[in-house]
Length: 216
Image 1 (cartoon, rainbow, N blue to C red):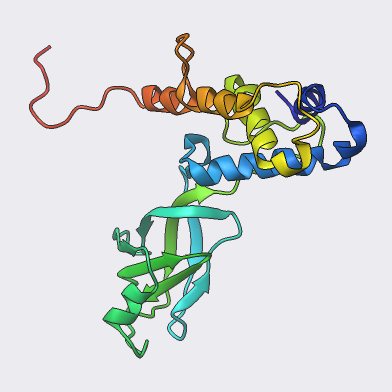
Image 2 (tube, rainbow, N blue to C red):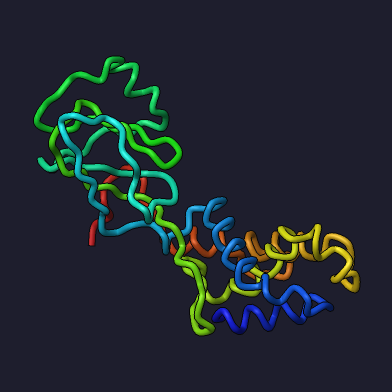
């Protein structure tokens, strides 16, 4: 479902056209918030982003495409390095930030910044969840959300998110209608509809834990 279709679906839910100028922003904001709340496989980097470091700095801005969770990092030697979740991690290792070496061995990510240890002239390869690309053209489609869940997840998310504005404009729907619609879209319903989160889990396939491979 592209941006134009999503706008049309939203217009069916809202009985007032005075807010149509906000629809594109609302749709993009809803996609971003869903991407913030869940680890969407389509936004998980398969090819890393690069970050150049120097021997004189220990704190850097993350790439502009970064959204959340650096889940893997390698230095230019190909070593997989430790990823901390708080910049304080680096300060505990090197409070004065004066140690240098040939390669970075530890990083810590907090907000939109990355701290490194030791300081080094290095090239880091970073794997993370990127920002969804904003939709602006009518043919643009939501980034990272499977087509089957565009209407089931994005539309109710918008109504819930913008409830302060829309509460008097969607009065024909029962109480908690959109909360239930959103929940069903995410986790499935009693009718047997598969929710988006369950769909992602099934898409990963069976994961074997330990033991020997079966004989052919």
